[in-house]
Image (cartoon, rainbow, N blue to C red; front, top):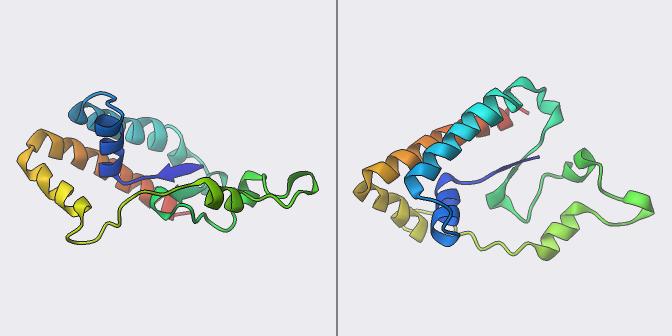
Length: 137
């Protein structure tokens, strides 16, 4: 299962909220990992039938067939499904990414920080390639 997330959200979550490294370094590092380890070495070589992509911004809504794909729904004659569990426990706090929102202001603020903007752009390009790969499923 591949969880897709917005590049700005990834960078803010890791470097601002969790204080894991620096924006510029993490942006380039994550872009490299997505391109080389995830796309080139793994998913790009696999039949798309063997992986499923889930958009983080769509949580708690999941693809209808995800439970069956993971072979975890209705185990041992249970009525349990992954959809019910995610809806019950996932408390999504992501912002709506609409024009004029706080999100758009953060993206625009990157203009003042060329190195951060480049790191964001590198990660966005890598994630766009991953999304393209996922859309070919």
